[in-house]
Length: 417
View 1 (cartoon, helix red, strand yellow):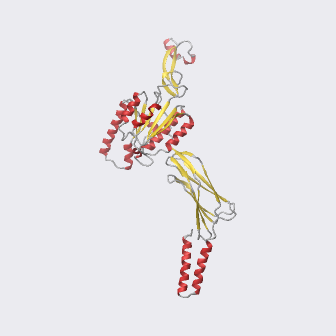
View 2 (cartoon, helix red, strand yellow):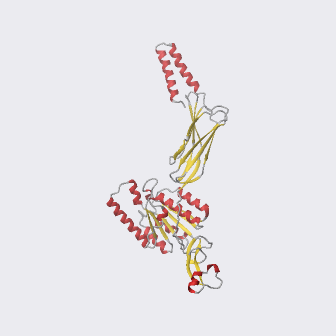
């Protein structure tokens, strides 16, 4: 590819030749032919393209807001000098360059190598790919350039942020086979106090409450709440309405953070966690435990985008055969634009599930991008409070999550009837 400098050079040479022919000036013709010949011959002198490029990432998976460190190693594998070499590493536009540069000009001799180091800030969750690498060779006089791409892509996943959850108020009513950390509301082996009862033969002496014995004169033992593994079902609303707000602050982003944080908390307690995401369909991840399940959930949440308008009742009806008997169900939704939410919640509670609704306030997110008159805002806010109160009336625990409230604080603000 000819550069602008080469175009000016050959145009000027041809112009001098033509002017020299018009005025019969042999010297101008010779000078013009020299420019043309020099430019044409210079096009044969190209930089050699046998360049090897390797990209090294500091991590393949990271969390939203973390920094990614990238290193490019460029090596000239030919026996010729590359001359002027421009290297540019293509990065996703969602990522921000934090330090260093992803562009460099070098001139490598045979066997020589160099490195490019830079770091990226990842402000948005998602699945990304860094690459390809653009390489441009320029000859000595910058009259000719050759462009090529090294098809080297590095895939990475940016997980949603995982917040610390200090307290979990969800209790299971149904025991499972293996001992775990979720507290059941029945007596058995565990850590939380349940009640006092009279001593019977065979009770361990370590369970005797000596203070009660000193007070009553009768042997009493402490009963504990039974600990057992339970299945927790998280339902995340990713309908198109969940995009209300800014790119970084909207109901879907807050919902993804909440789902990831709750999953991390319960998996750490050795409970089984299932995830269902609904938009124009239902994406379901069966209940399981362990780190493998944890990263499956994070990967699913990383790729969630707002779309569709599937009603909640259709989701709960399709998942009803998969729900374990008496298992807790956590619904993360703004509950806007869906008239089936009350019926869905009533059906879940009627089947014996402990339903908790974490509802990011889409009305307050809308105020971040548009001006809502105060009177209209108060009316809409009252309507939302009435909807939440109605859901609490069916027996569900309802949390009105405001944009400026941390998740751990929001989980303590439960509205019960």
